[in-house]
Amino acid sequence: MPTTLLTLSDNVTQLTLAPELGASLVNWVRLSDGQPLLRHSDELALATSNPRRLACYPLLPWSNRIGGSGFTTPTGWQALSANTEHEALPIHGSAWQQPWQVVDVTSDSATLELQSQSPFPYRANFHIQLTDGCLRLTLQATHLGKQPTWYGLGLHPYLPRTAHTRVQAQAGGVWLCGEDKLSSQWVELPQAWNFTEPTMLPQQLVDNAFTHWPGKALIIQADAGYQLVCEAEGCDVFLLFCPEAQNFFCFEPVTHPVNAHHLPGQPGLKLLAAKESCQMSFSLHYQALGR
Image (cartoon, helix red, strand yellow):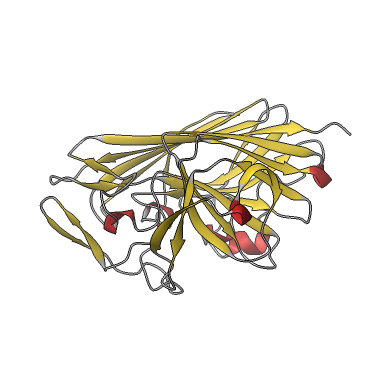
């Protein structure tokens, strides 16, 4: 069945969305020449109906992986199982694997909603807005279960990567991971992963959560003549995913480190009772670079 796409635009950029595919963003491009500002999704990628092949998708009611086949809540154990064929652990929550409903859409904005029962009852709202080249994404979750449980939020944008791509983002430390890809040890920022100044991306694999982030970042694509000025609200962690020898990377604003449900104090997670909510937002503002 063909996927229904929504198209939004402002005077600088155009965005396509696929609400049925986990509220995924499909393509965000510069209007003047079609330059991809997020990783380009071609027809083959769209035909897979897999958000992980597209440009960006929301993460909730948690981001990244959770170990231990579940987690403890104040009233008992929340069991979880793997939700993909290629990962041994449950990953990125459940919202990205469900169709969302369109609540409202205009020429430059859309509001999507999900009523979910998995892995517990919740309602999610996702507002997407384009304004003068700025893409703003606002994600909210409301707990609908009778018993309180832990929530985390995130966004998973895929960005173009070339030999000239540079990233600037401050952080106070980073969680190292074991072979299971779960957070094992927090350390102060290694020099090789210090992005305080605009820095080329590492050639080696990086898939780690950076903490004490003030919520601002700069993604510079000098060869394509632009930069993205990024700002997050409601989170102070970003996950950087740099796979080896690929033409993309991910800069993911998230509320909590990987496997926070099993870390002391559940850092970044929020315990929500019935009808309580949590929210985060992330904006990417296109700016042309002077030639």
